[in-house]
Length: 417
Image (cartoon, rainbow, N blue to C red; front, side, top):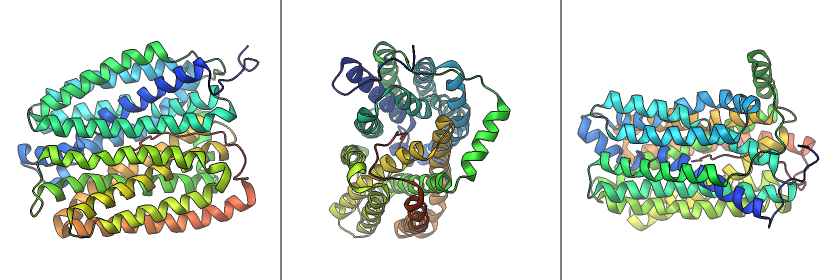
């Protein structure tokens, strides 16, 4: 029945229901994952640690998420998509509530580590679900909406946490996000249509390892994984230390004022939807070059002294990042000929390793050289990304047909993130 059943088309009730459910999945994932990011200066002050150490509250979660993703993708191949996503969302919501009751930094880091591991059941599996169930004509817009949910979740989690932290202890702010995520997780269970094109494959470690190694040996996929690491590393580094930059003199912004910079995520959601829809017209390499140029311009803008210029730079960078993520993550699905869930997992593993490594490493740069040093680090990552993209473009000219309707794979998540 599975392969003979029509896939989900645009405009149908199933399309709307699936899109809303996966929008919620992206929202819950990134609202809970990044809720601590605007709180990093508060955590550094309360626990008496450096910015780099406080950033571990985010980095341990993304690190655990990264390494669990290949397993979760294969587990979903064996046991199904819907149940794994719903269970993961419920667990991460409960762990968000647990982290709100942490009284020491080690306890907080332990809760965040487990939360990151639980979250791995969503991003790669959501990609695989869309790849399985959506028609080629519907998948582009569906993927854009899913990534928009990532952006909205990341934005709402950060903004709401920042606003609440002005009137509540940071633990109360985190608890509110956990309760919101738990409510939305229950709604997800009600909305997502059952899988009709899922083909069960038993979980075997040997074939999984061979599949992962095979993807790593494919030059085009390896380049896309490298781009994920570099783009996400720059993105998280920017946001991690923009909060320290803006709460310090001469700006001395309050937590509620810092929240306003996370409104940039609304523009990021637009960027992902627009660029995802332009792939057929302009091709993936050209769009990635455009996104890279946008990110570079945004990073340079933040070096200017006026607060308005810094905020504008963050907005511009965010637009470029989400556009790049939408295009690059979709390209993974187009290049991977088999085991797309594993290819998606490797993309996201690189993506979140970039977040963990650069996100914490940037703290040492911040302590030594301040904001200009952080921007130089980001520009270095983008320069390397440009070189990787040049090589990838040459490979694409030999193999890919950019104008063809892509079988898309994305996350985000944050991206996303």
